[in-house]
Length: 164
Ligand SMILES: Cc1cc2nc3c(=O)[nH]c(=O)nc-3n(C[C@H](O)[C@H](O)[C@H](O)COP(=O)(O)O)c2cc1C
Image (cartoon, rainbow, N blue to C red):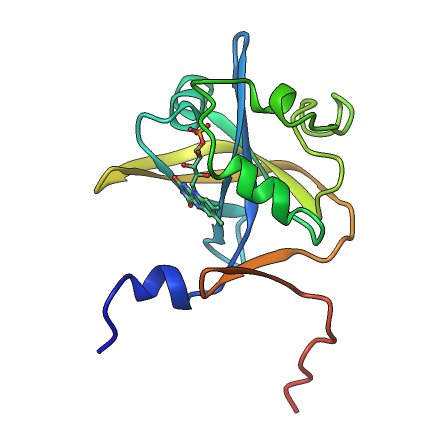
């Protein structure tokens, strides 16, 4: 039996930027996401309660998930180690965003894809809000995505496995 949080280390997961806004405030943080079903466009994120991201999701009833692309590791570290309560991260890290009509002007330009979600359910466990959202708009920028595994960032640029 391994010690430490093996779930966090061993379970490969997409690196995403969770983008939020309400009234005159906005925020962006590094996180992950999983799909809920093959039939419905639902996805789930887990966000530490009390953080600005959590507050803005709760206040607005929506959030954007932007899948980080190769070349965005530095940005993922920056947005995963700073708090929106203390700064506007878009300004602090000079984040260029897609136009307003693609992701409300909150999506970093160089991402892999993005999905705008309306909150369908929300629950809390051990200091995290687990939020399931329904995708209502999306866009594919066709860049290879970043993956988090074994405390490191990986890219997905090799050929897919054939399965035969
Ligand atoms: C690779 C990576 C994945 C992360 N995943 C999550 C996550 O799923 N949920 C979470 O609450 N924080 C996660 N974090 C930490 C948040 O990004 C960090 O707490 C951030 O400062 C929160 O931003 P905010 O305070 O502006 O909301 C992750 C950080 C990294 C680097």
